Amino acid sequence: MGDMVESDNLSGRLVVTTALDQHLEKFPALISLSKEQFKCQRCQMVNQKSLYSLTADVFYCPDCLVLGRLTNQDYLLAYPEQNNFKIPLYPLSWRGTLTPKQQQISQKLCQVQLAKQEHLVWAVTGSGKTEMLFAMIAQAVSQGERIALAAPRVDVCNELYPRIQAAFNQVSVSLLHGQGASTYQYSQILICTVHQLLKFRAAFDLLVLDECDSYPYINNPLLHQAVLQAVKPRHCLIYLSATPSPEYLTRIQAGQLNYSLLNRRFHGHDLPKPQFCLVWKHNFGHLNYQLQRQIQFLIQQQQRFLLFVDSIRQAELLSQLIKHHFPQLKQTFVHAKDPLRGQKVQEFRDNHWQALVTTTILERGVTFYNIDVLVWQADSQRFNVQTLIQIAGRAGRSADHSDNQVIFFGQQYNSAIDQAIKQIERLNHDV
Image 1: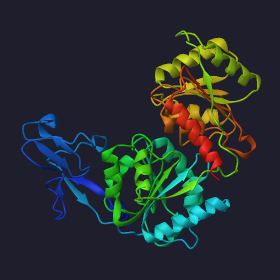
Image 2 (image 1 turned 180 degrees about the vertical axis):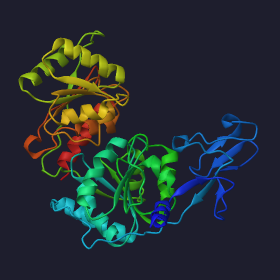
Image 3 (image 1 turned 135 degrees about the horizontal axis):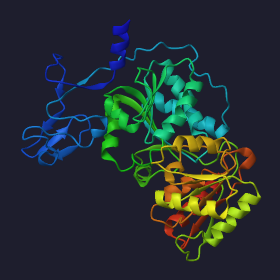
Image 4 (image 1 turned 90 degrees about the vertical axis):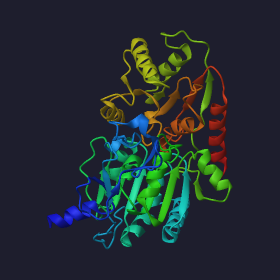
């Protein structure tokens, strides 16, 4: 039995081995392209030997170092995918209902999966795009296929994992990422970060790429390659996005990519339209008067809110200034390097905090109910159109509180702010 589990765990995997391995299918991890250049066969990236040498004869790949160092002394082995799954009679245990528009897209995805095509689902934040995948995933499970749901960020994977487990409680589901996810186990449905796909070769019949417009996937050749290598030659690839990047929009306009648009949240109400508040020049180290006034109003209304800023330094500084001016307000800050990040986000979800000052780490992939959203220095270069739309999408996510406020504070009304507001208006009116 132990040998069977071990061979299953190798199914579809790309593993690192040595020259001593007797396996006939092993191949060199790094290959020389010329005297100076080499190519990595795990990530396909090309680099200069002289820049990445350990000794005169040994060099390594810098691009996939996060998965462990590969040198030209190493070998790789790609194990064929076995699709060795016990197929349940009723894969889908979710008993919710879809709106007519969601149902329409769900049916389209089932057709796309059967035809093994690529498809983009352009669905506004909070529209229930995960639920629209369920029928397609259940169909793939029934056919004995292997499925991956990949996202660029760990937070999104962590939020997705329990939802997929609950919706498919008769199906094996596992979680894989580099931040303390459980030990890898062979499963029919894998939820992972895009980086982890580099550990697979021709493993997946169906791959869903969530947040395909998000950092670090966007404009990243290594991660694009990871997706292409992880799927079988005949596969179905689904992209999910609330704010498709120019890369996808160009392919749509050229007729190279089909898509489905869902511009309504499940509760049917409009997306909150951001207001712009012109800020007078403010003194560094002082809490801006207009921001003060807005926070005072939210405290009086007992309204919970997220305050987005463009840097870690700004998050810590603004949180201190708010504490000084409003000592009675229960608030804290959070950012990517915060060791208590997960705990603080959960505490905010549990109503422990009334306010959370945050960087763009909370722009997507997390859901809070009945919160207003403020963006400080929305005219900063760090806030592009997609980011501003995603941030605005944190508000108005429940039927009871679909009219939460979104306010962009800035010293100038720039192109990104203008385009973000106009795109939200278009989505609201394009029925």
